Image 1 (cartoon, helix red, strand yellow):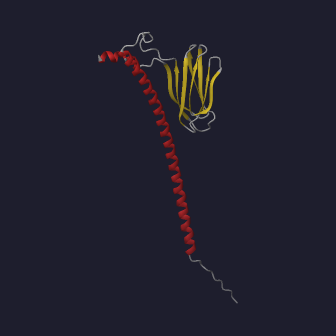
Image 2 (tube, one colour; image 1 turned 90 degrees about the vertical axis):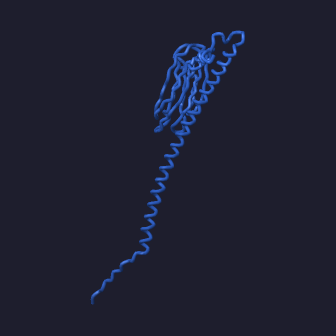
Length: 209
């Protein structure tokens, strides 16, 4: 029974939906574009988030095959956009960091094309699903939620680690600067105090008659 159950649930291990998920580095003054062939009537979702770099913001732009702008946002940390393709062709979405002069960014995006097909060919039938089929569908939905939560938590963990490392670097440089200033002030005070207590040599000049 367990073997048959795992066999029925095997499709859960693989993604039926066509999706592009990527984490990449976007240098300063740079622009990166991606392309996806989509058929008319297909529902798509673009989700992105800046993981590291600067103020954690980036420009995003989505265009259809005719060059019509479907989505455009400036300096966004994260966002999600859902649309339905109105025509066949290659859609383009770009991420831009051209407004930054010296800070590169790490960007994550997930571009989903289409909906999940039914796990079973007869899932949309009028009659009710069997107990095993219902269990597989429930597990499938639960696993999708788990994957989404894991992705978001990994992104938050990476972003938190980046901020902590950046804060640690700033604290280290600040401590070095304070130590240097303290050393200079200490040496200056010692020299100043020694000048107060040092004997001044007086020179006497005798004038002959």
